[in-house]
Length: 295
Image 1 (cartoon, rainbow, N blue to C red):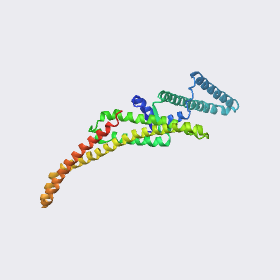
Image 2: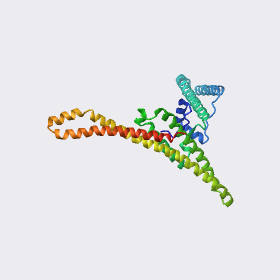
Image 3: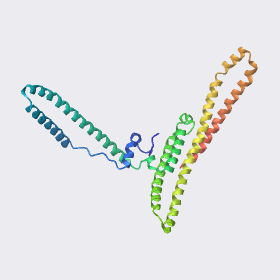
Image 4: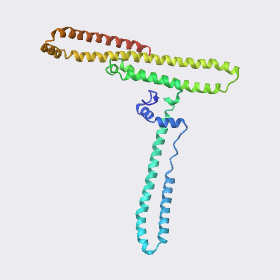
């Protein structure tokens, strides 16, 4: 799970670009920006100058040699210099292409500034809260009861990302303001300033408590879904066993263990019925918990 939460209203392809470039987002937070692309004219001038220097060096080399060596050096130069030029030019083109990709990605990420939250943006308390919220969302989203449609999977697909984003957005604002508040108060010795700051600190605490309440509501829903998940899996396991009852009956009959078979197999059928009822109760409880997440 990437340490990036994206506004669910961001188009899917762009959201994927954001989550896949967390390292660039962190660098951008630290002030990084790609270098401007060199103009075609300057790039071409540099390559022409490189070729000219290479040719001048070849001429000087040949002019300073004995005649009997000139042919060999000329052949070597005719082979080596084009190879070197290709290497340098290829490197130049690769660097240009890499810079172009970085700049395009940078521009797209910058366009969505404010539409994503990095875990690195948050203070320690807020990071823990966000991690709890994301675990709860993952518990529901990946559960078999959700995938199989026993829950309101359509509303989950809309509501849960919205809840996760709202929690992340609020925590980002809370973290930024709390950090500034602490920095300001670290320099304060005046009781007058402390008196003014005290209700502001309480406002920060109240805001955090409100976010905690959101997270706890998500966790309650996830806990209900986890109960339904256990009942669902147990129900299916019992159904698998019940589907093989005739094989067990045949075995115990052939082995002369009939006295064991009847009560135990009857209990198996009863257990399956009880689990089915427990599953229905768990799903109803999950639906009930879901209501508290509605805005």
